[in-house]
Length: 499
Image 1 (cartoon, helix red, strand yellow):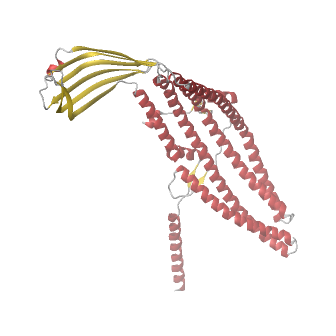
Image 2: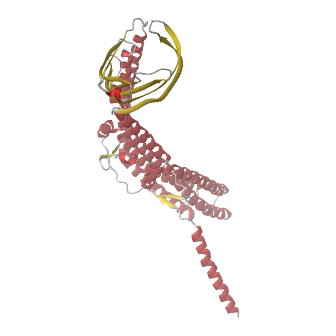
Image 3: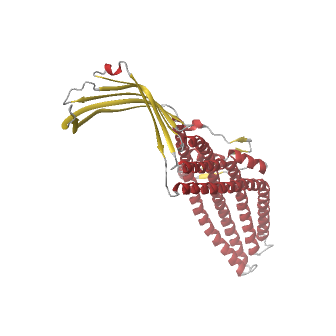
């Protein structure tokens, strides 16, 4: 009976153990592992910065589309249907006297116009078809309809500022700049992701170090207490080990807080909404390569948005000078119209045997005295243009210097990483040696042990810091040059992503 009872208890314990293990396994959520490449791919598609960059380029794209469409023929219909007008108006009698009468008119008109801008001259040409009708309620209207079946109208300013000529230079340049700025924004996202990635990775490393240090400090403190009781070490050395243990506890709490904060910022930047922990996998197997600084500067001058943006600024300054020289000066505008016209008592009559229509006018504007206003405007615009030339020249020199120095910094990273890796290895071995000597009682100097631990921790952190510098510098060079030096090709841009 007793054996049967023991068997039942054992069986029940086994069932509870198995069931409990399943509950734990189902209750636990496996952490999500991410590499740097995966994190960058996520940020480039769903981060707020990526979405904003896409919308910013879409705006520029449609601005450029609208600019090009403005040079295409535009067809428009303008009309008034109807226009009711009841007024007291003067009326000229047959004997030359004038009387006033209360008249009520109902009119309507429509004009169909095909208009084309002439960008090279700043003029406008249009083909029109016009029809109007007037019905006077108080009298018989013999010819209530007026038509211009077809007319060609041309308007051309002679000496005025032509914005179309400058827009044709500046607008395509602005569109090219927008494309390059979009690629640069995507590379900036990669830079930001790299910083967030290594901040979280460093927090994970700090948590691992803090946990390990607490375990080691606990064991070493226990050993130190025993040795103190045996009289093998002084009280001060035992207290140093106790202090190290307390600091390790505090460091672990801070590491937990920093890890939670870094993980929140990382997930927020990438817009990862799943309620799971993130475990980052450090980048490895780096294929080091060198970049020719002179070649990188040449590629940056060709690909980057910076030189194009400076060119646009110079064009805008030149445009402002041209506007100042032409505005408020002698001006002339030619307006010409040729077509057909006819009136009729009925609508069909207004289109029978149309008569010729011709109109030519020249409008002149001749300033006589402006007390030097126009001259002052020109001088201000010219001064601003000179300032822009000097500024853009210096900014281009600074830009090229930044590219050159960034490449030099990148080329140093292979050696820097090797030094950091070697330092980490040496510090680890040194700590293990000193700790081993302490454990077997051959060394009781707690200060030396603490220093070895700090060196080991700092060396590991420095290694990951060097790793972060390598990848951040790599993406910074990509942003500056819009060029992938691994594949030796320009960074791609696909307009189909925005349609």
